[in-house]
Amino acid sequence: MSIKIFFNWDINSTSKKQYQLETQSFLTATIIKYILFVKILLFIFFIFTLDKISNVLTGAMCAAGVVDATSYGIYLLLFKLINIYFFGFWLVIHNFDLKTENLKYTKLKFGFYLFIYFLLLFEIILEITMFSSIDVDKLVSCCGTLYSNSEGSYLSSVFFEYGNHILIGFYLCFALLLIFYKLKNDYFYIIFNLVFLILAIISLILFFGTYIYELPTHHCPFCMLQKEYHYVGYILYALLFLGTFFGFIIGIVNLVLKIQIDTKKYYKYSIIFLTLYLIIVSAYPAIYYLKNGVFL
Image 1 (cartoon, rainbow, N blue to C red):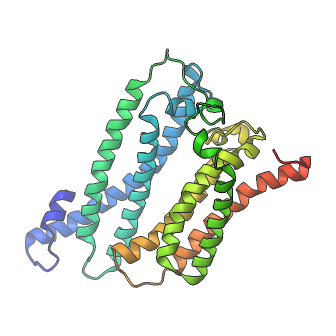
Image 2: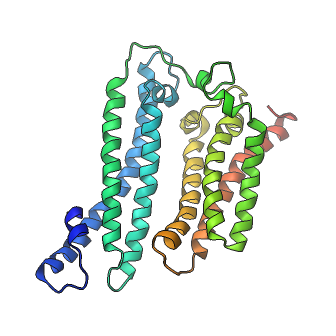
């Protein structure tokens, strides 16, 4: 249906076919919106499933071991995250489209959905390939090995050699976001929004996670999703996603849709969520120091 709408849409036409397309477009858009909400729930279920599967894999202590059990795991996880962002962007375009008198962005939003659809198909293929490639008899690495600074760890050269630089860059990037938030500089805010997302994830694994676990050798990005740590990982990742998502919306509005509207609310939502994220992760080492008088 999306293909039919994309190739045959003509808002200036008064034909019966165009009327049918307009009716079908509302129904199709409603279905796509529900797919978005289901996609978010399925992503949470996916993480939950990875954690449960770790119980049957030798050496795996959490979802990290399952992701590393095959060469497809990390790519599947990235694709799922990217697709959630894209579905969110589609929803933004859809809402703007409904506000226009002539449904100006209908062709664009369904063309964009076709692009997302192919990414979604690739994600499904990748997911089937990953789970069918898992060998339950094969010894896999636990998160303590995967994210350690021991020699041979594929993350150690990046995470630990430049650890101090990454942490400084994390706070410096947030300071720049505050400056561009005040200046309402769309382009630089979008760029550093992306940089902040990357640095936030790396610094969470490298530094802040150790204070959540209160263990200097524990750098896992998945264990914080478990009950033992009060599911704080869900809160942190949700705040980081929402903060960067609203930051990216500014780019969607100005660069893609080229709509001249007031983007203050998107700036506000973005900086609020990112600030909350920074406060929470920073509170862990601060509280640990107040309790013990030393840092890890």
